[in-house]
Amino acid sequence: KSLRNTVTDVFSKEQNFVIFSSLFDTANGLVLKIKSYENKKTSEIKETQELLNDVPIKNKTFSLDALHCQKETIRIIIESNNHYLIPVKKNQRNLYNSLEKVMEETPAKTVDVQQDNSHGRKITRQVSVWDNNQKLPEKIIDKFQEIKNIIKVKRSGIRGKKQYEEIVYYISSKLETATEVAKKIRNHWGIENKLHWVKDVVMEEDKSLIKNKEAAINISVIKSIGINFFRLLKFESITEGRTWLGANLSGFLP
Image (cartoon, rainbow, N blue to C red; front, side, top):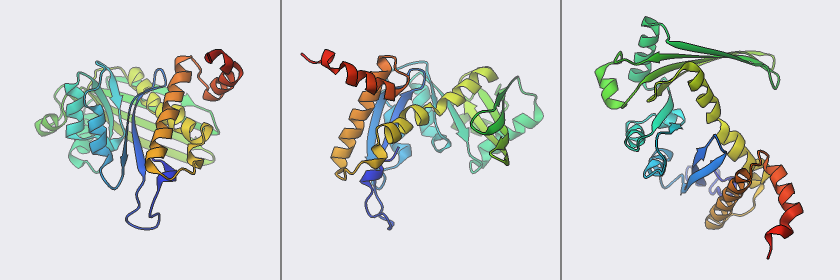
């Protein structure tokens, strides 16, 4: 997540701003670990790999964006005794084509189909899962460790008044059913809805006028701590939590 208020040299190639990478628990809505950096000084891939190092949890599944379908990122996750669930872009031709070949030649082991008729859309989500079972070429298996599940997600229907269709492939290091995988893929977007949106809209981070990078970073970290505070008090809505705190603040004072 970028901090809009820290942008400098807006209209030049030297544009710079602060970015946060967060390790987010989608089940409980908690920020477990956070790292800030500047886009001109490093990369999201490198900083995410550093964030994943020395993670104090085991046997969990990390869901990441397709940018992080990287050999080194996967190695770090596996060596930390955790699992990964990552989409694959078409520009990773060897991996993408190898997944497609398995899907064409063998039937899916499990399939999950769900309908979404909310917010003016009618979307069918079909998640199909194949076991790897060493069907992938050896060079792919060597590069991307522990691929256990091959996943195809097809979303189709109507958004607004327009026809819509999207197909995305994923790889995962954990053997699971299509229903289990579908839940994890939906939960992946929890970081947008439960963290980024809350900070930008509810806590008005997008409207911040603080330009000093260190100050902006500190305030953003405090907001993440605040979100954790309300979530630990079991508030699903941060707005409700803030209202409750305002009405009960005297109880927290000596």
